[in-house]
Image 1: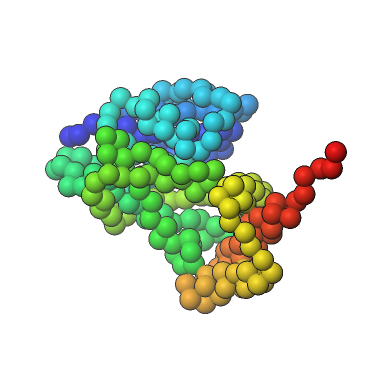
Image 2: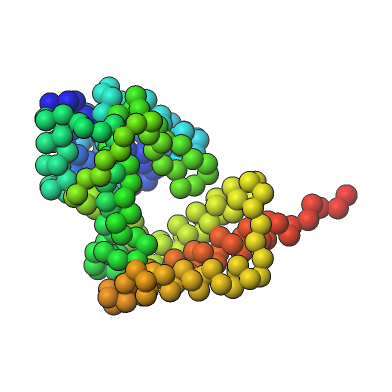
Length: 254
């Protein structure tokens, strides 16, 4: 079988990382790059058999993820976060590829999120296919401040089985993440010269809600579908409002 390295980045994930590590125990090694945890994250990872490296202060998502890839012993990489889990069916699919031979240079894996007591198989959140299994000789993390991804110089296949995602413990955690990510998005968009205005501020959040709740069948998921659709709309408005704020900000007078 082709040897496989599981790589994770983490910070203060003592409540979730054990399950993530258990789900990739089938890999030939596990590498965890920690960015300065103050809880038991590193201890839990080491007890699970992971090789733990500390890379602090935080260099940004792309640099941190690539540092984990570079630290791996093997070229085939399975990348996941502390709030993600490789399901048994996904494990079997990956092991079959490693045994029989990879036919592509990388593979997209669909993710299904657990939110408000149910799996979200609708809205913009599903299937949310991400390149997470790849040959590092052909792929590397790229991006800017937010929404990084693996850029592959070669062929990319798609796996059938889902990776589980447990992104938020509650609504408050979701809103904190939105606040962080929208600030990063606005900073990057402003630096790139993007601007917005009243029309986009008024219409884009509305369209985001309708797309998620109606076009992508969020209404079928009850209160969870409503929450995801509303939060995606809120995310859209907040990132644009922060961009508008940056665009209107005047330098301090001397």
